[in-house]
Amino acid sequence: MPKTNNKKVCIVASSLSKGGAERSSAVLSQMLYSLGYDVHIITILPGVDYEYSGRHLNLGLLKNEDDSFFGRIKRFRVFRDYIAHQNFDVIIDNRSRNLAYRELIISKLVYKGPVVYVIHNFNTKKAFSKYTWLNKWLYKNQYMTAVSQAASDKYREAFDLKNIRTLYNGFNFENIQALANEDIVSNLPEKFIVFFGRIDDKHKNLKLLLDSYQQSDLKKHNVKLLILGAGPDLEVIKTYATQLKLSNHIDFRGFIKNPYPYVKKAKFSALTSRFEGFPMVIPESLSLGVPVVSVDCNSGPKEVIKTGFNGILVENNSTIRLAEAFDKMILDPEFYNNCVSNCESSVEQFSIKHIMQSWVKLIKEVVK
Image (tube, rainbow, N blue to C red; front, side):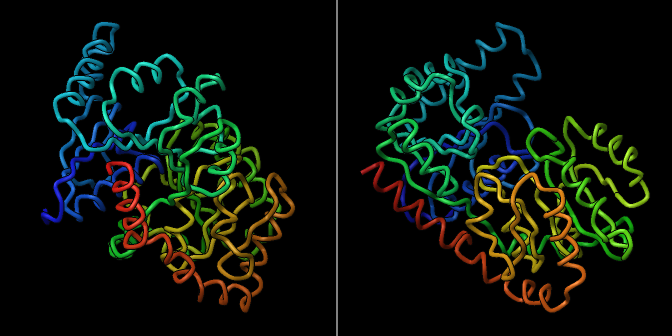
């Protein structure tokens, strides 16, 4: 580790597995570690799918051993004592904060010293507790970042936050491109579009994806739909695909640790979420030269996607408009090729070399 400074940073995350916030926590650890910070990561759940840097306290392993009431008390004590003994210069909290009593205890009794709270979700119920007064009391004067401008504006007004700013997720595009060059063991359709993410219909609105694919002309042109991911609604979505008589046109591959070789070979990627914080799949896809067709959900897509430049942005929850966008990308080669030519340059602002300087500036401000 390069010794450029001696600041001690703790990143707190739900896990290092199967999620955008979790993946961004891993990337943040790598960014700060590369700059010489003494990086520690504390995770609440056991999963580790993403590469990270620094020392890792995995409380999820204790959860697996004993998830009784006394086991939870033990994990809390380990968490509290680790924070107290390490004497961190700054804590960066990437968790959702929607359980009131837990956040009251952690914010007031566990965290010592400066904290930066990161907001990864535009859905208030997933980002904060249901008590507006408590959110204002806990966070009004705290340093907070949101991963989209829309989320920053929303929560600044909702909770009168004095120190909130937009700080986009950083992406190691060189690493993504290297991973995309790995061999794919299984066969792929000759032509396909791709969805990659968690199979959670309440969040990702995958039934809209299937309905729009059904109404489009993609099947006529032998363009299949590849779905990469796992989640609570996987069987529900498979059943729905059968009901729509799409079983021969949709290829479910489950969770794949490295989805990038598949994404790189796709005609375009699709996002149909009801809400997001900042969907990491958009810059990841664009960095591989793959355009994105996305609904204009809150929040994030419209801060990246420009219709006709690097993809198509359509109104949310419109099966017809989304189907038309799918057809446009396949049936208008000039339009499509123009989008392809702009993909990589359109996400340069999200590269780690840009984002990590913003983190350095913020940490200096917080630590003083």
